[in-house]
Length: 196
Image (cartoon, rainbow, N blue to C red; front, top):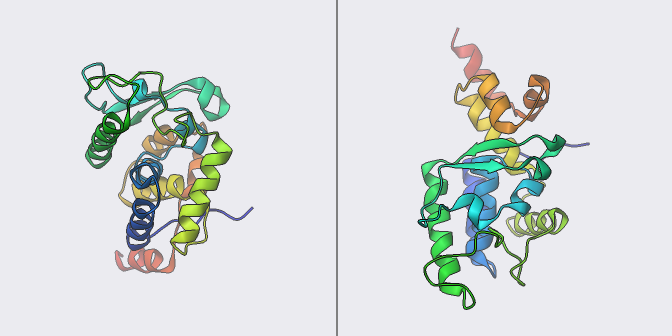
């Protein structure tokens, strides 16, 4: 099975631009950002609820717990949210408050899906995979929904983060699994030997 392509920074910007220009652009852009900046699997992303991401006071959490029932291997884990993603999630909350007619203007329902379909229900993992495919195709990039997860793991590895930390963040139980996600190209190899 061919691995998903790891996007360059330029390609990611193009994908985000395409996602933002689509119908439900803010939602689609957030989906791409969560995938690339938090490394979530599609099934994990599909099951996130507002209450998982937003505290009772409306602030965006800096940590999100992925429940075992929604994680591969039934193993829960904590996802850490960086400043860039906190900003996007804060904007997303405001978009949802503006769109919501049934919900209180002050508080979103904690059980509502973070990423809702047109009918404001949870996406199925399969439907979310199809949406990723559509976004990437419109951006002219041949890859899959797993591209964001590979981007996340590869960028951490190339930033000098400990393999053990990356393994924990990815929710892998074996380091060899994490290593398979890391992309290496000729430029990286050239730079590596120049260090000597």
